[in-house]
Length: 120
Image (cartoon, rainbow, N blue to C red; front, side, top):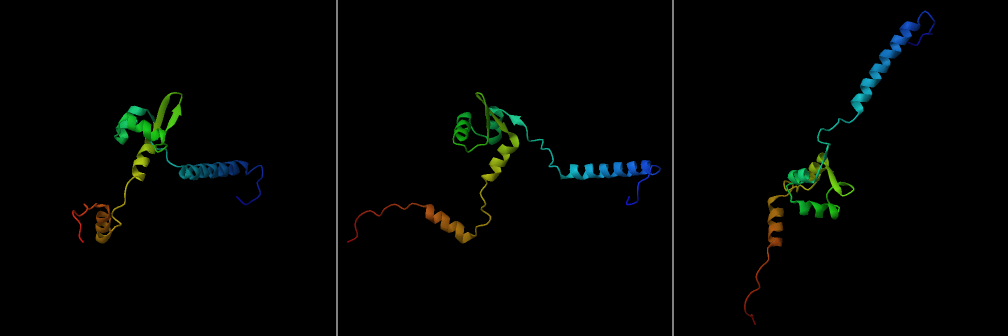
């Protein structure tokens, strides 16, 4: 529609602009992050079930600032997707180590008994 718009061509111009707006809406909706079904608010009982920890442990992790939570009044709330992400971030990557690296790590952690007696 680079042509000059006249009164006679006004309906075609409006139709063209409407189509362009619809295309833009589709492009913008494709850019929005998808709504996670897991991003829902849960209580302490369900949080304990998800991370498989006891209530006192969960309270301790929250107090230390290790577990993502929200506090409103006297109640603690959690988002399910944040808890799952917290669990995923704690995963150890052991596939990157080779045999020699794992053996050295195991030998480093072994404590040896002191030898009995004196060797003079």
